[in-house]
Image (cartoon, rainbow, N blue to C red; front, side, top):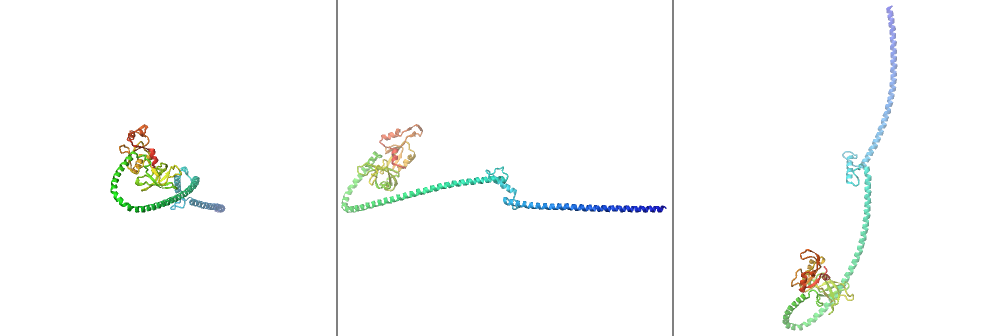
Length: 426
């Protein structure tokens, strides 16, 4: 009974166990199925999320790629605009090179870009203002240049007008000179004809006189020698007695020809007579016994045997200088050596050196000493220093000097500097 019961119990136990196992496996399968279903739904949800994230990432990549392209284009455009590219490194603007160039620009233009300027954006308005000011200054200078150019054109036009007028005046003067030369040539031809006639007359008379000349020549030679000796002594005595203020009959020279149109003339004194350019003469009528003063004549050109003079201070417009009139200068003497003494102060245009040069050209020796050979004394202005060259309070008059008084006592002729100026122009 026990075995059967045991067996029955065992079978019941076995059936129960199998039922339990079946239930368990069913539950397991159901759980697995549920898990699989849950896993399926979970996997599908994650795939959607991943897909959405992938789509979002692709959109982001597309957006970033577009922005990168835009930024690259902007950078390339900025590089092409700014420059400062180092070809050995990249095709982009080298910031260090650009900064160095900007710093150099600020150093070169300290008046335009102050040191505190740090950006090109801040520098551009300053550069624009400077360029505008420069253009305005250039425009102003161009206007000034135009004004000056107009003034120069006006002056040149005026100068051309003046030159044309002067050239016309010179042409008129040349024509007048040509007329005067033609007149002088005609006069010369007339004189030459007269001389030829006289030569023919003299030639016919020479035969008659030849015998008489040969007879008296021996006697005349002795008389000539004796007369020359007397004449030399008389000339020296006359020169000593009256070297400055000459008598009318002791004229220095005479007028050879006159050009009324040019107010010029020629006198018979020249370089051989030691005549200086600038000497002035009183022109007196050449009529015998006349002492009528006509004008002043100033030497403008000196040749060997004659000199050109310009007439001035004409006394009577109806009685101008004419051929044959005589000329006087109280200091100039064409015939002898003389000695002049200076007393007083001499300066300026008529300084002591200038007087020495003027007088030496006329055979006059200038000195500060008085001796027996002194011919005349030129008196200058008052002196402000004494004989030792020391300043004095009261100016010293030349007439108060002992040398002046001694010269007057010896009969030395006196010529004032103001009189000398009237007869010589340097």
